[in-house]
Image (cartoon, rainbow, N blue to C red):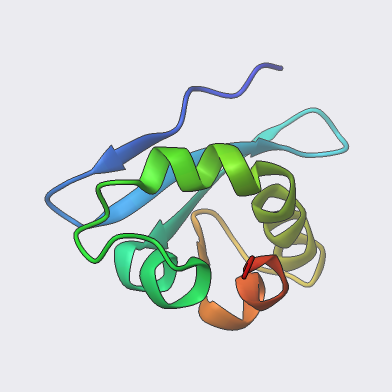
Length: 89
């Protein structure tokens, strides 16, 4: 299965994306602009959300897979601890 393209939802201030799981299903996930800002040093308004997603895609997808494996249901909302190891100086 191919996951839909990621997009930034302006009204909710979230980056929304899908992650293909080991069984082939796609799970929806989201991350708030505040987490992108404080966790990944993104712009306050979320204007660079898609660029941050492209830069950190593998890590974000791994975080979603970990959350699903630990029992999280769709949509998976990533939190700051989920992305703490992804920040670049």
